[in-house]
Length: 228
Length: 228
DNA sequence: AATCCAAAGATTTTCGAAAATTATTGTTGC
DNA sequence: GCAACAATAATTTTCGAAAATCTTTGGATT
Image (cartoon, rainbow over all chains, first blue to last red; front, side, top):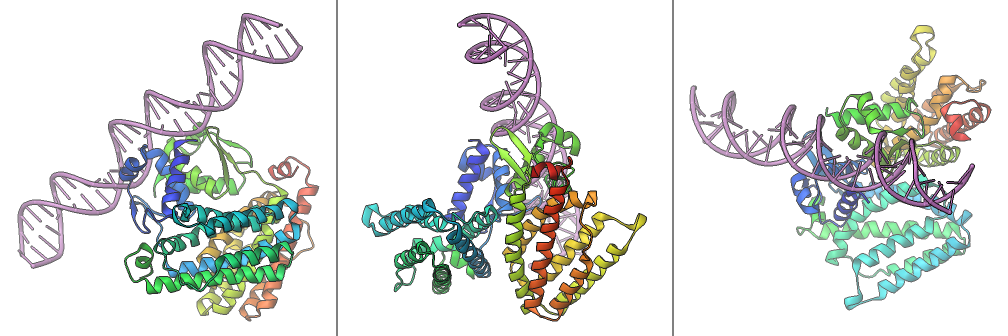
């Protein structure tokens, strides 16, 4: 793996997790020290991330972590629902045994991690399994373009979820694991209409919870700052 | 404008027009001579284009122009129909006077160029106006993510159209300008269902024509080679 | 003839410095 | 005090060479 690839992975990771806050300038001298490499691989990584809208660039003025806005969250969520529901229908139509097995396995792993407490609880591991579960649902859609866009939108919306997850500021009274199980069940039963409805509700609830948390959380988390 | 930006524009331009054929290796020494600049700006441009799937990259083995395939054409077209029809509905719902004016103006400019013959005929100018017309239809959808994906898919499918356009191998018996006019009219009348149906048919006809031309054209155009 | 291996060559990747540009500071004049 | 400007500093961008890696070539061996 080349240094440019390592730089890409590291920057992407740190931006998605909010360790590099939205809007923050990405100075090459800083990054060079932080990641222990020269300018060239960093600039290549930043150019890739610019194309993915995770960083913004201005000619001769360098790069910044892409800012967040509530408008973008709603935009990305709407489009996500449109694309993912269609992908879910395609997967239900085309999926074979190994696709089904992938869903069962991903759901099991997700529920396992969601049930863990104390030192075993690991929000990043939970997050990884959550992502894997949603990918497993769409894995059989047979459309590389769809999967790319789904991934882009997942990452875009994840940047809003993570600061909320970390402050545990999510409203109670919602059984997310039950939603996942119901979604998996409807999918495995090949009930496309039901599965699509559940997926849509799942995302609409999430975006409402996030918007609510942002509104209440007038503290100085990166997300709250971005929302103001 | 920095050299890296010039390199990006030039490479993108040459790849879309097929002047750099699909699958062709992009050696830095060659590109450095072709575009008269050092490696750094070229590598930055190539990394951006890689993120946009116009070039492929393999660790320590450099870059290539992204290949074409009939599967990808069908994939991109299906997704394009899904996203653009929804964007058209949104535009019809949200569009104001200046949006309408933009459509009228773009259609007029397109028809004007389409009617030109002899030395005034310019396939690239026609292509630019065609692109502008389709953008004008969706301009009011108020969704940056949608517009980005639409642009990506337009470029992806355009790479299949251009070699066909250049060999004039399109089947006759189709009045594309009439399709554009009907689409614009239904849109301006805010008849969303009709406009969406026309847009869908427009794309389905195009993809069928292209697939047909590729099948017949067993010569050695880049596209035909890619299809085999 | 086919296969392996080392050497030479070609190519990508990375660095460090130079060039170009933007941002900041300090000074002058009003 | 403050706008205008020059000098300085900070930063991005680009180049050219060095390092690392992959590819080809040409024998040596079986």
